Length: 113
Image 1 (cartoon, helix red, strand yellow):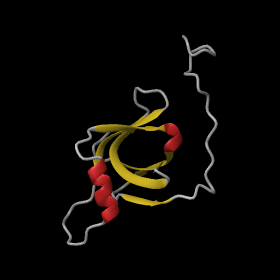
Image 2 (cartoon, one colour; image 1 turned 30 degrees about the vertical axis):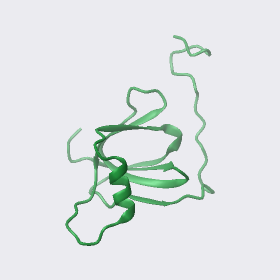
Image 3 (cartoon, helix red, strand yellow; image 1 turned 180 degrees about the horizontal axis):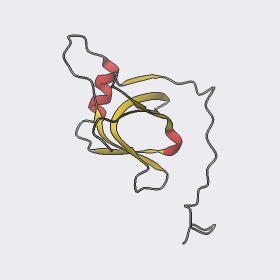
């Protein structure tokens, strides 16, 4: 994957919708998790500071990669450029969980291969 790819990922945490940008998004090595690597944050070139983005930066400071539970991820979009990371209200009224098997592919019903 080229370094120019940017992904906008929206997920639910603490009853709010978090929106972050990452250069790499995969299903990762942990079953049931989405892996985000190389998170991208806006530049501090302006005097105006967004407290939501600062909170997200502080939360992920020093993090090389993170894993999000699949059921918390609302959406993943490939975008041309980054925007501000943000935290917004979530009422959950128009979002339903996608039904999925809890047993990894290639396993029997007890989860063994």
